[in-house]
Image (cartoon, rainbow, N blue to C red; front, side, top):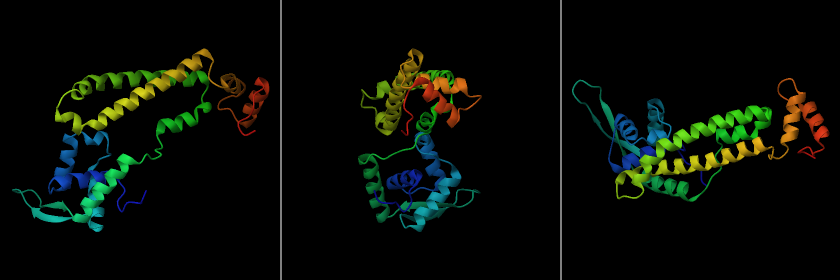
Length: 222
């Protein structure tokens, strides 16, 4: 995957908007919010101006005109260039076709879960499951109707169906981990629990080594 001249996903959104028609930054921001794209693409006005400046600098967009409405300050309207259209199609095609490694916060937390005791991890995962249930329920009804009709809303919000599918998969995973902790079926859970019983706080190397010895299991690096 080649390195983009402007790699911020917000830049892709700007190119897509200007592919529709010339716009000034305020209209870009308003249109993205009207379409609820801030749910998928991090958006704030300051970063939008920075992205627009970068796209101009790399000649992917250009100044189209400057307009003034009444007593309001002048607004600069931008338009996409031919290289910008090529970049838009090439970039979007790459993102759709090529899976990439994305470092999520939940994955980071899972990778460090032994820092917490099994009981604390269980409690927190149950809270997460409850919140996932609420989020799934809130999205489910709205999206179910779109997927079976010719309503254009579905096409323009298809990313929401992806998020819902990921939430359902995450909920299934979280529920599986919860059940394994409850039933004592999670791999090395007795060692995990023993390390926290020995430690006064977060287990250190000595506590883990003692827990491994007590439970007769193999240390990960051995």
